[in-house]
Amino acid sequence: MSADQPKGTLPRKWIDTLFARMAAMYGSRFADMWPTHGDEAEREMQRNVTKEVWATELGKLSGPELKAGVAGLIHRKFPPTLPEFFAMCKEARAAQALASSATLALPNLPKATGEFVDANLERIKRASAGVRGKEPTAEWAFRILAGERTTAPMTPHTTECCERAVASYAGRLFMRQADNAKRYATIFEKANEKFGTAVAA
Image 1 (spheres, rainbow, N blue to C red):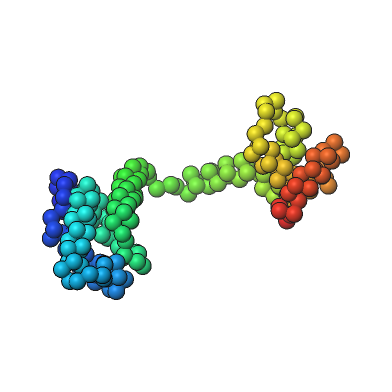
Image 2: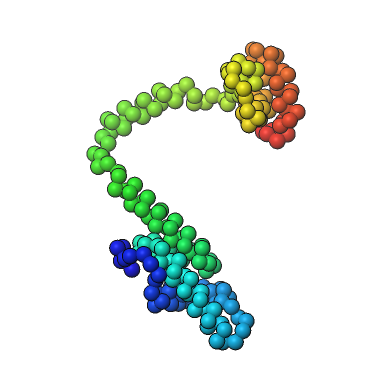
């Protein structure tokens, strides 16, 4: 199917080809998807109805979407149902388009010189010097729960997040090392009652 193929019901021949491909790839797993009850005429009628539905629904896809979906079959252990295959086609094509646009958008930058790399490494080292090697701290959580960092009402989620931080290793470390730890003792005890076991390091 070409990229500019108008959308509509797919020709029966294309559906037959698709089903033959899946039968070859999945063997009995694909055959087991077909009805086994009734006589041969009834089963053939059900197969025809199934193919008509596939032809109608897949006709809503573009050529590139169909092609991307078919290419993605090799990565599946089980044959897809119609909704699964439809979604596969959409998702696989979207991923292809995204990858293509990202590649096209890359600027044609010159290769970095040694001097440029060295200069930027120095900048990174200077910027990270203040945080490298430091122990984690939960002082921020203590201060928020004590009302020192915000005057806005706290949501239950914010409160839980802070209490979990207080009960964590970083919170225990802060309580052992901070000069003003005593003022947060009640907050620390309350958080540990609730979350101490869950977040213990």
